[in-house]
Image 1 (cartoon, rainbow, N blue to C red):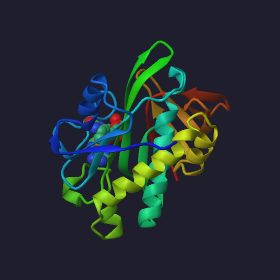
Image 2: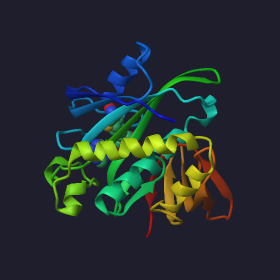
Image 3: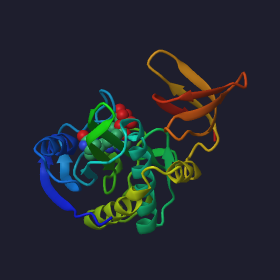
Image 4: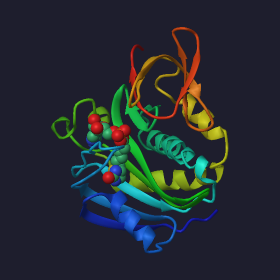
Length: 241
Ligand code: BT5
């Protein structure tokens, strides 16, 4: 597939996802990419805020994937695998993945992925793939538990080069949307493979050993009573190394 990228660069936006969503409703073409130097209302999952000062890479890609709605969660894993690979190729650093949507360096959060979509029954009208990565921020500009590429590499990184490399990797992985290869690759690079974890869901927690990711993106956990549980949402904490 030959994707024609259209990169729209803004100095400041509330959220690149919001702008990309609006453009999608106005029939913007697939592979329109919205980038901002900083965001004033960056979002994470649910009500989570996303700190997005200048120095990070904050962007959203408009996609119109031809997959049935239940397959859409795979996009997040595809994007995580591709972004991880591009960052490792460009910097030589060992970037890992944490369920469900984190990129980590060591055990600290380097970035996250937020997908928002418009669907009609089984059909995906569009998906906004939002990616946020801490690149050149110094410690004082990062929330607790976060890390930037610069802090680990000691070097200022070229944001445009990194963005290009990530977009190219996502484009070349995009044809694999349906493939179980994505989940295998994701799990191979998972930081809790396998580890003792605790997943907090809206009304309860599940504790056990993370054993893998299912093809629908659920995390497979072996609980202390040796039962296999699958969770498809929640926040994960690693309990040991
Ligand atoms: C995410 O949410 O990890 C998805 C973040 C997606 C951000 C991108 S930037 C471009 C696009 N436009 C947007 O508005 N969003 C997307 P979640 O798993 O819910 O994690 C959010 C939590 O991470 C927060 O509650 C904080 O604890 C923490 N956090 C906030 N800002 C952070 C940062 N810059 N680096 C690391 N952790 C952060």
